[in-house]
Length: 276
Image (cartoon, rainbow, N blue to C red; front, side, top):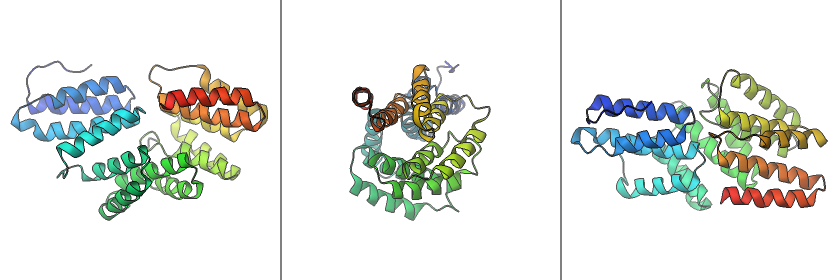
């Protein structure tokens, strides 16, 4: 429940920030949007740092929610309002790389990634280094650059072993997909087993879809098609539309591989609508 106290004291603002971040991690992204928006609406001089922090956390919330266009817009707003921020520099680097990839500008993404590597390192900034690797790996996977994707995602997964919750980096399901596409099924099975063991006890709609997609990709024949169908059968109101679209895209590819061309084409069209 978000606090409704009207004053702009630091305690209230800080509480709203913590609530918003917790809601974002719990995948209640709309409620998190509200919390961050309220922080950004405080105008008192002593809340300026809180407002800037809320702006950054709002971007991360949209990325986690799969709201690509909103995230791109918020990053562009940040660049206009605070082109050279003194705080949250690591997040700024990751956001720049993410946005450049999201709009399809690979050259700009590489330039920003170089800048980010000068700032971060696995020893000094492990979280930022892991986030950057996970981001680059996911977009390389989407472009079909499997070798590049594997290099980034295996790096992210290695650093991410220090984080108990696999939903923080969200790289392991992508690593499973890359390994399957590379034909390295034994390693993919090991990566999936590791992800499932870390997922025990977690109630994350994103994680449920990611694990279901990974199981379906790793399976063969009719079992694979059934697992994809099962993954897409139900719909959680907190579910990421982007993750559903990715799962449908993989399902359509598998249908095509089995010669079910009409169903594959229909699935691709539905996935395209979701991505758009």
